[in-house]
Image (cartoon, rainbow, N blue to C red; front, side, top):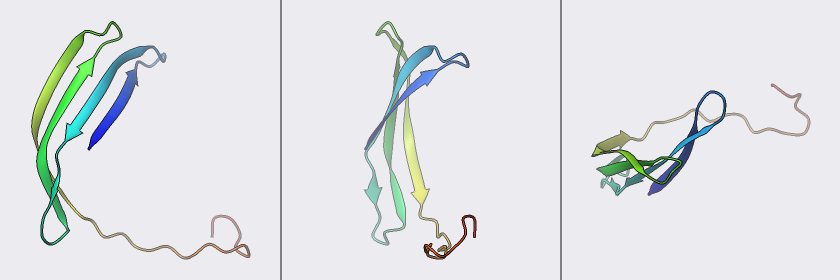
Length: 77
C-alpha cells in the first residue's frame, strides 16, 4: 500500500511530498499485519530530502458498535 502526504508549514507554504510505501502481510488469524516500509520525501524543487525504512506491525482492535441512526433521532443522541 502507498500513502502520499503533502506537507506544509504553519502559514500553508508547501514543504514536501512524503510518500510511505509498505508491503503488508496478514497473518493466518486475520488479526495481525506486518511487513517492511519505506518513507521518502521530496522538496518543492524536486530534490530528494530524507529517506527512512523499517518494519511495521499492527494488531486489529475491536471497536464498540454504535446505535443505528434513524430519522426520528435528534442530532447528537
